[in-house]
Amino acid sequence: MELSMSGSSLRTFGRCVTFLARVASELVLQAHPAKLELHTLNSSRSAYGSVSLARDFFDNYHLDAAASAPPSTPLQCSVLLKSLLAVLRTPHAALDRLDISLPEPDAPKLQFTLHCLNGVRKTYWIVCSAEPEVQSLALDRGRFPSRLSIRPRELARLLSNFQSSLQELTIIATDPAAGLPDAGGDVGGKAVELRSYNDPAKDDCETRLHTQLWIDPVEEFVEYVHAGDPVDVTFGVKELKAFLTFCEGCEVDILLFFEKTGEPVLLVPRFGLDNGSTSDFEAMLVLATMTVSQLADSNDAQQPATSAQHNGEPRAATTPSVSNHTKIWSELSEVLSANPRSQHHPSNWVGAEDNDDDNEDEELLVQTTPHYMD
Image (cartoon, rainbow, N blue to C red; front, side):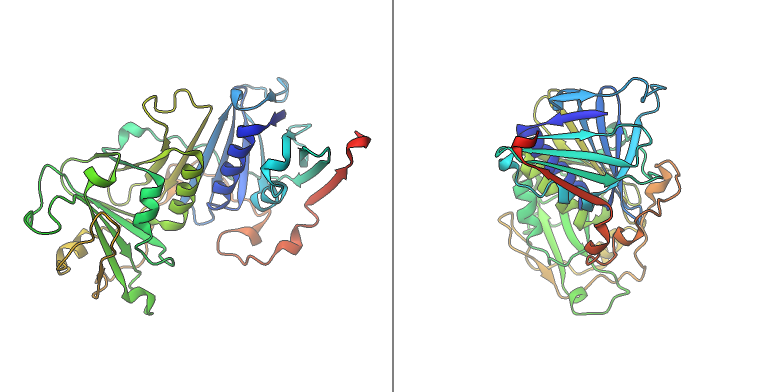
């Protein structure tokens, strides 16, 4: 496999790697004749990220026919995202192009070559994992009855009302046509609620602050579709913010599909009227959700005197969630192919210490060649 990219494609590739690195620690590359796919799955199996780069995305894309036989089996390798981030540490403005090469299907190292504008050439070899864990995951958007679309900056403004240490967020969607019982009050017409989820098993100062934000879909969302009974989904905030940053850098809206409690949510970029038909890359983020609904807590909680308006004013309730269950996530492994987890780099899984950079010296080899020694 040999490929190269430059210009805007190189910048987009850097955003893709940064996004996936905030989801998990290991990256699986799958080379198909018509596209290159990047997959990652976090250690708790609650978040799955994927990016698909079409053949036209690259300046040069060559896949040895013998290496990809049979056609149904893609060329596959796995690398540490920390090492790949180290390769892309050079500012994109100083780069002319990036070359990626895998000499053989079972090659132990993946080669990256950076061609700088000043004539310097940097070559990196990243050790490949022997047992890639992630396989591709396909979710039909038609299975999700509800969806919403929002601009990244608007979502960032809404999330700024919550504590920065918040780990889980609950979205409660209601039918706008059904109306709310207090339509004459401040909450009337606001069919969507964002609520901070605090684990009742934890007893500290941070969990005593409970924030609820009521949203009018007409004012805040580009698109909102939901009919029928209210539903709620609770998922991780860290991965949501990573996808938000990615979409903001690519200047596209965020499209979120959801069904009900316990079912995964799907996030994809919303490219515009053509729905990405002319785009040379695709991305998706699948998040597991809690299997316990928060709607019971919503009905039992006392309705606040005033709601948060669409201008971003935070709304805090003094009484936290009264649920007595612990954090239970639906398993993404039910929709992913069951593969043994790679034990190649357990120290870099999510939740591990971040001060393990010294262990990467044996995996990342750097060679700098002056321009006059090409």
